[in-house]
Length: 194
Image 1: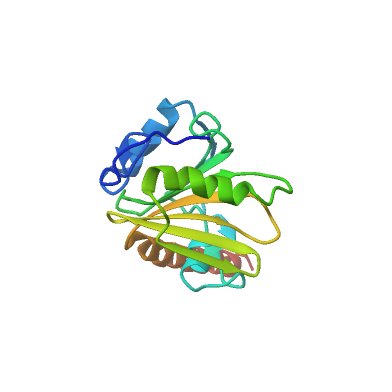
Image 2: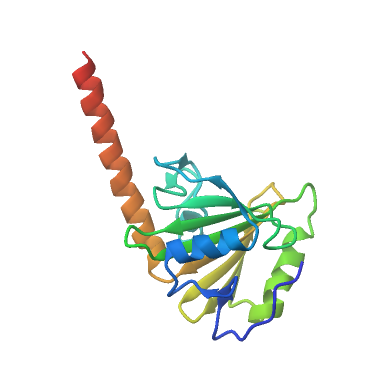
């Protein structure tokens, strides 16, 4: 499970700078590297846990919307050894908001440390470590991108989450508005039905 070594100033994923590449270009790169599209929603997919909310003071009880209208989920086994999925979240203007790899594991307490060491081999020691009731978070701040390695308790599945600074909040705001618009549309349809 090794990431190709690149200078920290580049912060590239699959040869692309996620701060500047468009979602359309990045999706093309992902598919060109052998990933398989698993989910490309035409509607909002709602989750009860959003890792970005938890990493920024939210909690499990808060609503998370993933991957949103502009997002997509891919089978990632050909992109990163040990990963089964890559999730791409995009803003409505076509910019990448975040990218998340999921590295599943069953009952392996050392999995998060091995993934953290793999990421540290590319970006150096983490800028922050947080351990909260068995949930573990590591954060690196790299030239406009926050890189997080985390796992929830009691799961041992680990996530590597790249968030372009400033865009995570924009993504949450956009998807909240989209969800509200969708609820209004459904309410109107329901009202028209009777």
